[in-house]
Image 1 (cartoon, rainbow, N blue to C red):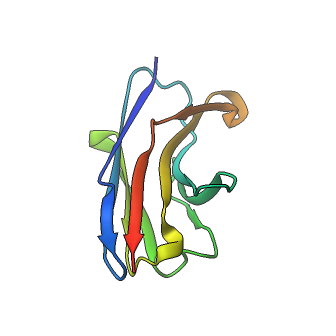
Image 2: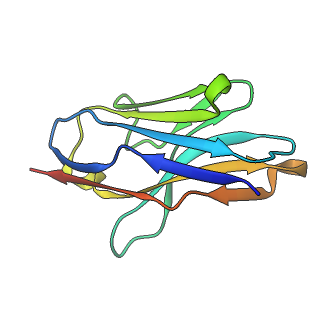
Length: 118
């Protein structure tokens, strides 16, 4: 069973730069990618950033230039460095791990709240 545990959320002032962490544990078959999604109240969950097994990254347009994603393979951890936070970044942030054949197996963390005050 794969488990993902996020940390690093909380209340942040606009312009702040918190870092989220997600630690993966368990048996992971055919790892494909890890990433971050977020869901704001009344909105659908959206992709924020991702990093593949070979280090290719992607970002939502709304966070390009402000967020970075990185992975520490030795620690089975993915990080989301968030810079210049805005109130519209307020959401629950979820860690995602994709694995299995064709990457169709998805694992999710429990989510961590990030609230940006103006």
